[in-house]
Image (cartoon, rainbow, N blue to C red; front, side, top):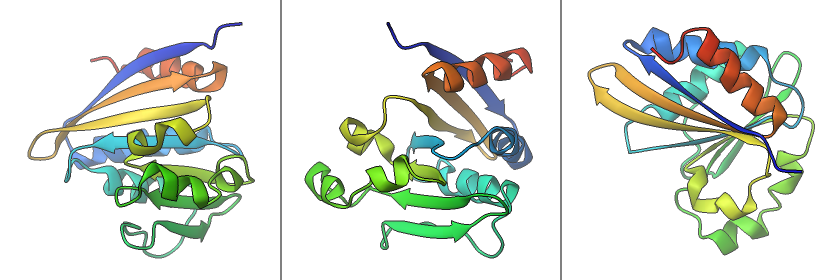
Length: 162
């Protein structure tokens, strides 16, 4: 059986529009949820992650795990795992045992996820954030698997493709 894939585009004119997308996605999470983020430096990956973390009830400051690679936080109902794999080789990432996070009881966001694509679960939501100037962003979403493809379809109906 072929895996379902769906796409959506979210145009964020302001930072609040990006926060709104993060909050919507956070409302749908369950244990094992994986969001794979990519985009140029300064595109807003960490800001998206902060908004998402806040929406699942993480208290305190969420900052980029650039040098620590993985940061773990407690949310209201689920743990939140925030990863930045920019400085890792595929081999180094493979040695970290990321499957324990990906298939565990928490929610994972991986920044620079395309660098370890071979290690990611087949079912995931990929977000590519493109900086359009000032606060504006274009966020391309690709859902792999029934759940994430369904999220993209709902986002399209909510007006994401505008």
